[in-house]
Amino acid sequence: MMFSLFLSKTYIRILNKRSLKINLSLINIATLISLLLTGSLTFGQSYRETLDIKLPDTINLIGINGNKIAYYELYLTNFSTDTFTIKEIRITNGRDGSILLSLQKNSLKNNYIRIGTSKKDSDMQLPPGNTAVVYIDLDTQKKQPENIAHQIIFEAIHKNKASQISVHTSPIKCISNNQLVLGAPLKGGYWTTVYEPSWERGHRRVIYTLNGKARIPGRYAIDFIKVDKNGTYATGDENIVANWLGYRADVFAVADGIVSAVGSDFLESPTISDHPRHSADQATGNYISIKIGDSQFAFYEHLRPGSIKVKVGQKIKKGELIASLGFTGQTTGPHLHFHVADTNSPLGAEGIPFVFEKFQFLGAYEDFGKFGKMPWTPIHDLTQSDRKEERPKPNAVIKFK
Image (cartoon, rainbow, N blue to C red; front, side, top):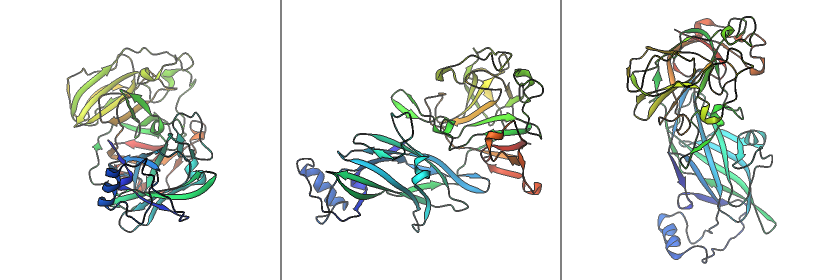
């Protein structure tokens, strides 16, 4: 659920102190009185159309590798007739104002995209009427802020004159003590937890528009690919699907629930090279959705044909065998895609955060370009490998117990 922070709730500061007159032909008297009564605008201030900023109404912090992390988005819409250039986005601790994250220059460019463009905006411009998405990957380290605030600093070009403007949003509550804790979807290992928030076409950044609403179902999705100690994911010819180490691995229910959907129409090619291309609406391949709580649906995708052992409406117990890992749908190799969303729809739902009850963190691919070509990097101290109520870090190698 999103909400808009309008000017009546936004503090605007013109950094170069250029005086601007209120155009009463654009603002009706009722609006002006409302601004004055709320204290958002006083007789000593000037009004100017700027940004509409959409944010989550709460920020969910989850544990990753000992730190508190959140993934969410800012939607910035230019309601002005001027072109804006976004210069910096600061996220601050609502309690003391300390900076938790500052995005500017390259870090901003890598997380900023204007909707409707096919490439990144190197200059971070936002023309009138345009909307941009800023992907926020917030690592609060070991801090647990009660709330956070956002400051957007941008340059506005008006009649060939530039002025710098800073918009401050109201603080947003952070939640860190209400994590969705799940059992293991697989057993044993070694499982590589393939995801990376910064990947341009990774699950976390793919927006789908369905039924008139834009959503990111895979915001917290993980793809599990099995490897051995040397980082190999297949024995012999890797083009043969049956040679992949994770192929046919048992898949288990992560919590008690009721089966809400089953898709089992996809066949499987015996080789990777013969695998057909699938559109977005066929991306899941054979899949299962299980309702595990209010507005909580666990999705298991790319399942092997003929392996699904459950049916819609069936009650499921945590740890129950439900299917096996396969190679169906939109995929480049056998793996289990797992995510949790707020609605029973593979594409028309918002991805929500989750953690696993326990697992063993053994190492990681610090450079995923070496996946399948080089061994993964093991951790130095195995006594520190046991993790409880955490999410695996990006491209980690883990074992489920």
